[in-house]
Amino acid sequence: MRMSFSTWSRVAAVIAIGAATGLAACKDDDSSIVGTTSTQTGYRGTGLVEINRTSTVNALHDKNVPPPPEDPADPGGTPSTQVYQNIQVLGDLTDNEVMRLMASMTTWVAPEQGCNYCHNPENLADDSVYAKKVARRMIVMVRSINKDWGKQVGMTGVTCYTCHRGNPVPQYVWFSNPGPKEAGGMARGDAGRGHPDPAVNESSLPYNAVTTLLANPDAIRVIAKQPLVGDYHPTTMETEATYALMIHMSQALGVNCVFCHNSRAFSQWEQSTYQRITAWHGIRMVSELNKDYLDQVAGLLPASHLGPNGEAPQVGCETCHQGVNKPLFGAQMAKDYVKELGPITGPGPAAK
Image (cartoon, rainbow, N blue to C red; front, side, top):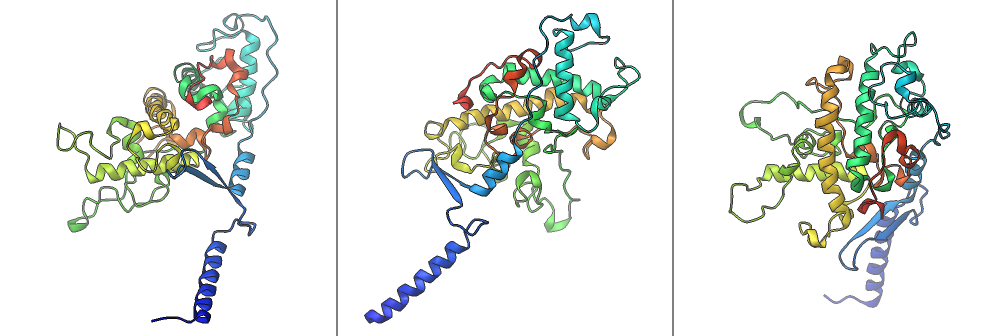
């Protein structure tokens, strides 16, 4: 059927109105279509583009302003072991450096509770407060990250504030999810699907993927290396678990898939961005931190701080990143605490 020119004009008008309506649904909070920014991160035509809502980025900047560093410790000073009792971790510092770190940790971890959050005010050397023993282990962990994982944290480094942000317990920690009571009959064995969990952005993908894959990174797999060869062939459930972990990482860093992957060849490392390599090591860093540090303090924590299975809080990507691809937008807090919290061995790819 042929249409007259006037008919085509009416059709075009309807299409234009529909397009305008569709765009209106995508407007920013201030009703301005100009409320987003896009950054091309790869070759044209590959879809490697990061799109961010300006208002969201501004809000994240406001939430990621680190506190100013304490004034440098007075030079000289006396070895801390000659001044303080029961110094087990900070014996390499002077008394002035210990006091500077203690003041900083109060700001970073317990600004409202003060020194008494970790110390017995009647005897600062006393170990009766559980938080003091936990803090020792966490200081060792922070030093280890800056020294042994420098290529992942780059020149940003980490301090207690990176995770705590002024909270005695970091806001973004997670526990293993025991899941709902299993149903019987045909509803039995849902493989964790259909039970929304914040760790996977309330999706219907397996809720326990973060628990499983951050503990066992080698099981992260979508495509087998060789078809029907060898002993390992990813199942649909394992593939879905990998997707769930990717969702966790995406929301933790505030990025989409093409921050690490080339959209035309997701599995090919040679066509991926350098961030994918950093993420590969970062996943293994998280796994090591949970195993070597967080799990080790479970016996020190009160029951109110433990998970449903009696485990200590676990760190994930969101613990440090909190919605941005570089914690604190790359603010280099750790450089002001090299003596207290260890040298940073970066820069690595993340410092570019």
